[in-house]
Each structure stands twice: as structure tokens, then as C-alpha cells.
Length: 208
Image 1 (cartoon, helix red, strand yellow):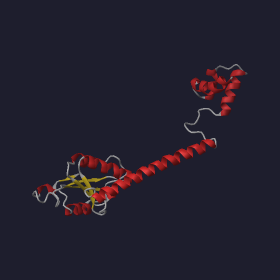
Image 2 (cartoon, helix red, strand yellow):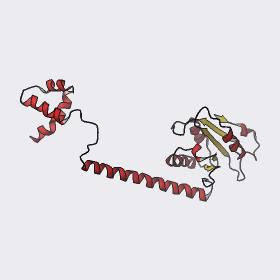
Image 3 (cartoon, one colour):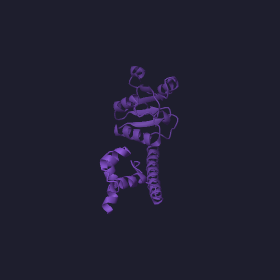
Image 4 (tube, one colour):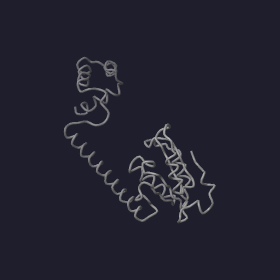
């Protein structure tokens, strides 16, 4: 829902002391909550246009957020009451901040004064956040690789579970080699496609 109350203000009221147009974004998580408190705070801060929605922060599809980002023009400043109203995680915040930056706009939070990309200090803080996020991703990748290597060393197999167990493959080979059953007959007996049985038998067959 977009509120255009502020559009009736005169030109001097439509921007802050630096002449920047303030665009507000407000969000609550459920339909049962109301936006009055955020709306009042953003209006008092000088926002001339408000984009409001009721949606969980965990949802990727937030149409009003998307409309707000598309609406931005160079010099605008996206204003929020708190960072958690805008983003669900550090990575999400950095992604949205980058979208805002690409539009030539700024971002500021009323509750977190340090989160203000219109100031050098605020831009530095978000740059540090981006570095921390990259570091965390690198640590996760390293831990995952180390964990997989250790699991493989213990004999853990990754990927989809085999359609046939080792015992079933051995039984299938016995039926084919000793009892002259066809691959198609044994595949039907085991409840798999004959191509699956061929693949299961192939390593040992190749070894011979």
C-alpha cells in the first residue's frame, strides 16, 4: 500500500535540509498488526511518500519493497524506523542497500543512526558489514569442504541413495550368472528398471 499524504506538501516540505527527497518504507509481519507507529515516525522524520506492507520479513516476495526500489530516483533517501523492518539478515540488508545505491539513492534508519549511507561514516559501516558477510561466507564454504572431506574419509557417501543395496546387487548377479536369469527378469523381481540394474552391475562387470 502506498501513502501519498506527503505529496500535498509544498516544495520546501518535500525534502530534508539538504534538499533530498525522503521515501519511507514501513512493514509489519502479520495482518493483525498495524503500521500506525511506523507511519507516524516516518512522517515526523519528513518522509513525503510511504510504501507500506504487511508481510513476513522471511518472505522473498515483498511487492511494496519492490515498488519502492523501482520508484527511487537519484538523490532520494530511503528511510525506515529500524533495519529489521527492511531486511531479514545482514546479507539481505547488503543486497537491498546495493539496489538503493545503484539507483543513486541513500538509506538511513531512525533507530540506528550509524546506518546512514548519505554520510561517509554510514557508508564505511556498511562496507565493513559487507566484508564481514564475505568472511562469514568464506568460513561456511571452508567448514563445508572440511566436513565433506572428513565424512568421505569415514566412508560416508554423498548424493542420492542407491536404488539397490550391495546385497541386492550380489543376489542379482547370482541369479544372472548361476541361474541364467535375464537382466529384465531380475530387474522386475527387484522392482527396478533394467537400466538401473545394468548400471549397478557395470562396475563389477568392467572389473572382470
